[in-house]
Amino acid sequence: MKLFRTLVLALFLVTAMGQLPSQDILALLEFKKGIKHDPTGYVLDSWNEESIDFNGCPSSWNGIVCNGGNVAGVILDNLGLSVDADLSVFSNLTKLVKLSISNNSMSGVIPDNIGEFKSLEYLDVSDNLFSLALPVGIGKLESLRNLSLAGNNFTGSIPDTISGLVSVQSLDLSRNSLSGTLPTALTELNELLYLNLSSNQFTKRIPKGFDGIAGLQVLDLHGNMLDGSLDGEFFLLSNASHVDFSGNMLQSSSSGKLLPGISESIQFLNLSHNQLTGSLVGDAELRLFGSLKVLDLSYNQLSGELPGFNFAYDLQVLKLSNNRFTGFIPNVLLKGDSLLLTELDLSGNNLSGSNAKPLEFVIYELHLVALSRFVHCTILYTCLLVRLFRADIDDHVDKSADTQSFFEWDHRGTSVTDRKLCCT
Image: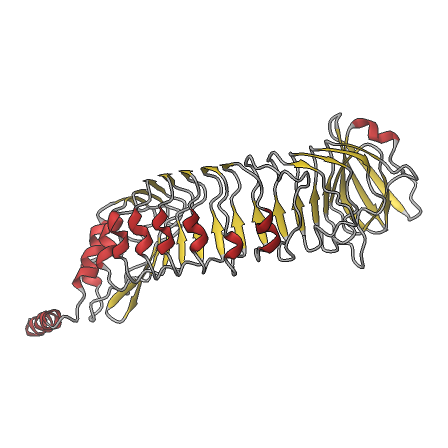
C-alpha cells in the first residue's frame, strides 16, 4: 500500500511539472469513443489508461508512435474499423507528425481546425467514408509532405488556399466527387512530385503552369469532365514521366496536329477516350514519341496515316484503336537495336496491309496484338497470345512460318480469335 501511494505521488509530481502530456491521452481516448466496431480488437483492447508509459506517452497502445513524452504518430490502416471519427481532437496532439487511418469505414469530415495540426507531415485518410467539402484551413499545413484523401465522398471544389501546402510532395484527391475548375493554385505547389486528381467531376480547362513544377513526376487527371485544348507547352516542357489525361473531353489544338512535340521526360502518356482530332504525321520523320514506353491514344477521332514510329525505340505499349486512321500499316512500324513492344492495338480503324507485301512483324516478346484485317506474323521465339479481331482474318494469316512452329487454334466467339503461338 505504501508503494502504491509512492507511485501515485510520483505520477502527480510529473504531471504537475508539465512532463506528462495528458492532452495527448485525452485526445486519443476521445477518438476511441467514436469506434463502433473493431473486428480485431486492435484499438479497443489496448487503448486503456492503465497501460500508459511512465513518461506519459502510451507507446504500448497499438498504432501509437511516441517521441519522448509526446504522441508523434497514429497509424490505424487496414483494420476494418467502423468509426464516427472526430478528427478535430487530434489538434491537441501538438507533436503529431503522422496520421494514417486509411482503408477503414470511418465517417466524418476534415475539421475546420485542421490548420492547427502544425507539426503534421503525413495525412492519409484514404478509402473511408469522409464527406463534405475541404476546409480552407487545409492550406495552413505548411509542414505537410503527403496528403491523401482519395476514395472518400468529398464534394465541392478545391479551395485556393491549397497553395499554402508549400512542402507537399504527394497530393492525392482521386476517387471523390469533387467538382468545379482546377485552381491555378495547384501550379504553385513547387515541391510536388505526385498529383492525382482522377475520378472526380472537375470541369473546364486544365490550368497552365504544371510544366513549371520542376520535380513533378506524375500528373493524373483521368476520369473527369475537363475540356479545352491540350496545352502544347506543357507537353514540350514538362519533366513529368507519367501523364494521364484519359477519359475527359479534351481537344487537339487548332493546328490540325495532335501535339507539336513531347518532352523527352514523358514515358507514359494516356490521352485515350477524349475528343482529339488531327493527324500524327508531320512534315518530316516523326520524332514525337521518341522517349515513350506507353502510348494510348485509343477512342478519339484521330485520322490520317500512321507514322513509322521509327524513333520510338523504348515503346512497350502502343494503343491507337477506335480512331479514324486510314492507309497502310507501315512495314517498319517499329525498328531499333532492341524491340521492346509487348502490346499493340490498332483495331477499330480503316487500316490495311502494306501495298508491297503482307505486313511482317518480327515479334520477340509481343504478348498481345490487336489488329484488324491483313496481317502476316513471323515468329522467331517465345510463347505469346495473339488476339486478332474480325473473323475474316482467318484467310489472311500465314500459317507457314520458316521456323518450327506449333499452332494451337483456340476459337472464342465469332468476332475475336485468340491464337497461342509457341515456337521452338
